[in-house]
Image (cartoon, rainbow, N blue to C red; front, side, top):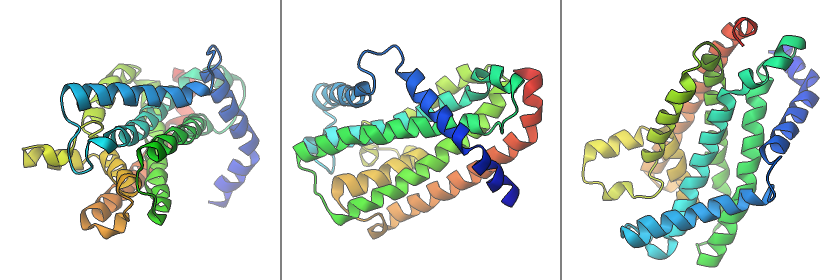
Length: 269
């Protein structure tokens, strides 16, 4: 363990530079730059609220139509973070193949840096959630501090996905196209714009609750929207434990697979 910690500390400055590079490249040809980080979720929230709240009349539920935009925004932000981290992390080894062939650095820095810079952008986008929440009058309680817990679990899940997918993508490049389909399925199973309690089928409800990303989003919504503790509900506590255990196991699997195959990357990139 000490060997890995020393290696990480030795290359921490490179990790910081890779994170800076990722942020700069993301907005290199954008006139709005980081401002788009705030505008994109806001505009997406408005579209989804109009379509599903006004046109299809799905803005009811336990929170009421007045807080439906915040409900949508919470789900959209967390899902977008996972989608971006997994997609960019998946391509991280291949997109840095020139550096991998020329200079030796720990290869885990590439998927890790891609997750970190996308996560930083996600944290900045939470400013929009705070502004919308204040405008719409969501209850502000000290339980909002607990939002750090699902956010941290989300970070673990994102790193796990990036480590696993970046390894698989080196050997099976078609995974990029397959993952687009999978990530779309995950979106529809994350209850971003609908209420799980309104679904008639108990089987469908159980399937959705097996999605760790939905569990993370549900925990986040509870402390943000309702101003209640995650631990005041047995169901929410179970979902927190389930998503945390799932993410940790996924991270261990991702790291082991990455470590076993990293020496072969140079032959396939």
